[in-house]
Image 1 (tube, rainbow, N blue to C red):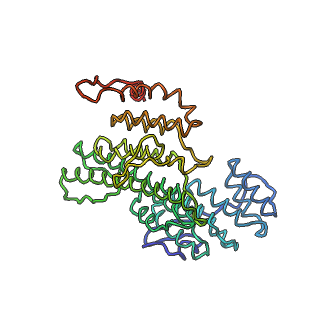
Image 2: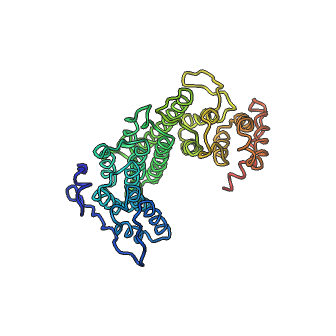
Image 3: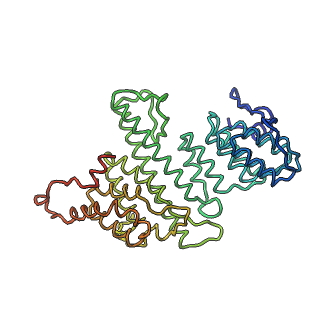
Length: 421
């Protein structure tokens, strides 16, 4: 049973469903020292920030509680709620929300963003239920949810490892408008998949060692195929492997949806839909997952070669229909702004490492050439680290194709450095 809106937001002292009860902690009303209390909302907001940033959050909240209502504002109360949210103090954030409403201040999108953050960072076992009702209640308060609020809800699912609900939420999003997925949306979902793969591999390791998975020490993974109690040991291993494969396939689907969506928005401008940018964080999540599954799922993991070529160019890529394309690199097309990192050492390391594992030496050579062509400014600080290593891969790429004439695999500088990491 989910929390009713009336129970969550109108009960001043506590709220509950069934036997579960979460108490709202009373907000502080006294300060440790004497402060002047501003009568102006702007000055009060400034005072709150100064005091809270000095490490005295209780004093800062008490100042707001002591201030006259005419000297307060939604901005001030959003600062209070956000401060508690960042600390994961869900009960205090909810109490501040009640105080805000009791004083007649209407909540805003920022208010609900902060409440969802409190759910994500808090330790309540009912955080998901509270977050869902918080999000659903936005219409009740006349606040139209934005993609920022959606991402807040997805962050709750991410923190609580509820991949099923996260995917359901994503599938309900429109493809256009202010609630269309953002870069953060795709990054959250991809990160969830990669985390699930790690947890499933932990589960697989325990099973291989002859142990049943201990959920007290192992995060509960999302299973595309569930494991029943009477399932044999060998079947459990097979099911976990299947779930790893399905989770990684889902991650690849998320990337493909992002890339297609980003290209579409870049070439079909819609005033109501924000464009998608590129950032290495999302790509690094995908490439790390490719490395994780490489030994067990090589055909799938090698799709990372196409992803690298799609983002940075250098190699003609093959689309789903088998058609060879040589389009503008995705990272160039999306024209990321200064807030996003288009290239860094970590992503180059992951890309070269993946190609090296697949013995795609020419891919490495072409990738480096494309990076120098399209991202000269970003490559310059990386040149000292990778230039000589790429030269060695150039030598490997030029070896004879006849296996009988090939020399034994060379321990390149790149591999030596990787071995020491």
